[in-house]
Image: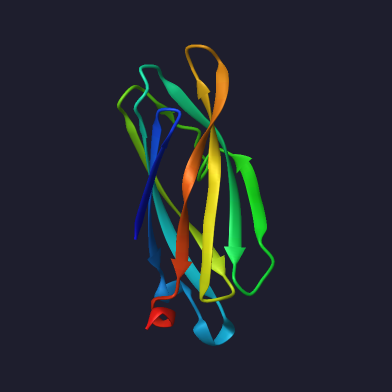
Length: 129
């Protein structure tokens, strides 16, 4: 499943993949990878500064993750440039979802702004049958 959203001139596209090899169903461990593609459609350079995630696990309390950059990077995207990274999320139930936002910096004005990540589902494929 692919979700896409443009906020403040930055397009975020998310695709997900259930990882059977990192999951253990009998112990209620469901691991998912998510791939993020971000494209700067502005006429100025931007830098990703931080990320904030809301993670919903259908059988557990939701939790929040916040921190600098993504996977140890704070990439700069020039006009029209794309940055891609892959990360993961472990759930304790077969169904969940994530959403959130990135804080970017306009490198021309030094003003920060938020770019929203579309809500994306994290579902064990066997649960859907």
